[in-house]
Image 1 (spheres, rainbow, N blue to C red):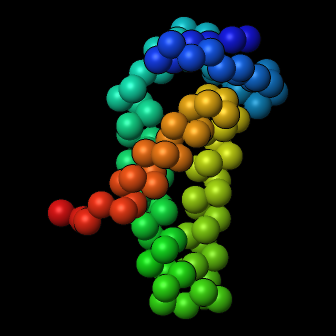
Image 2 (image 1 turned 135 degrees about the horizontal axis):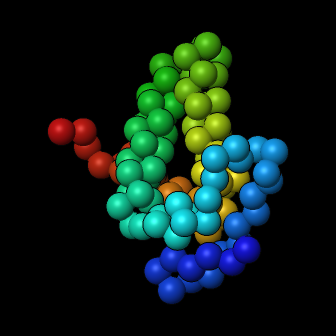
Image 3 (image 1 turned 180 degrees about the horizontal axis):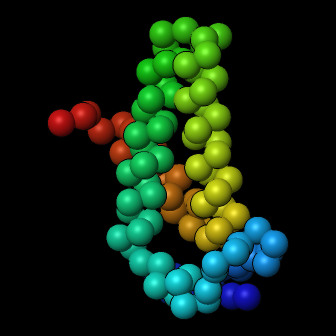
Length: 101
């Protein structure tokens, strides 16, 4: 199924066994605010991972932070597709470089 976001088409592949209560209407409501929110969450997770990596690359905290980041990325890619995942990754990188308030 093709979806459109900001004038770009992207493929959405949904497995009925993985998506219990998923509807096309929900995917059509995906907007820039949702992508921004996911980008903020990704930026937070990326900043956390970088901080833990700098402290101790072999620690459980570093491993956990990395796992959380990967899980978010794969979940976004699975639900929304690669194009949205790339947009979220770009926002996440930008957010992780900004100083915290």
